[in-house]
Amino acid sequence: MKKYLHALAFSLALISTSAWAQDQTIEIKEYKYVPEKVTIAAGTKITWINRDEVPHTVDMDDGKKGIKSSALDTDETFSYTFTTPGTYPYTCRLHSKMMGTIVVTDAK
Image (cartoon, rainbow, N blue to C red; front, side, top):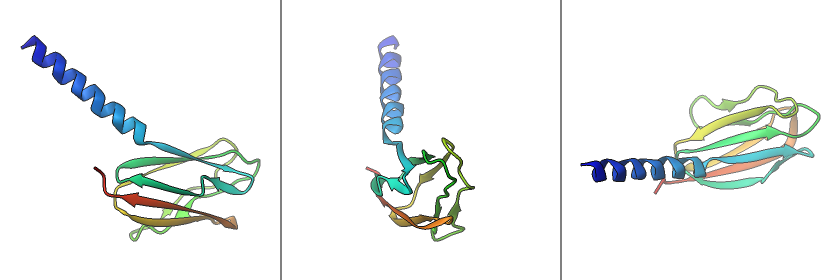
């Protein structure tokens, strides 16, 4: 029984480690999203962090209510977990030339 519990604990640790490994960060710097295009599996959390000295936003249409961050000041973050496969273009509503894309694939 003790061996079984150790194996179960180890398996759960691996599962939670792989979930953390999926999370990704996109930096906002020099009026660009870096990287500009990201491909992820469904269930992945993306965090945007503003490295510029001016505010920026993350705005996209998710096919439902839309995703809109508040204006992010320097070093502030915005996170969103993508659960549905698809292509999600996004922009900064304060600087319309700033664009990025998230491509979400089926989780495996």
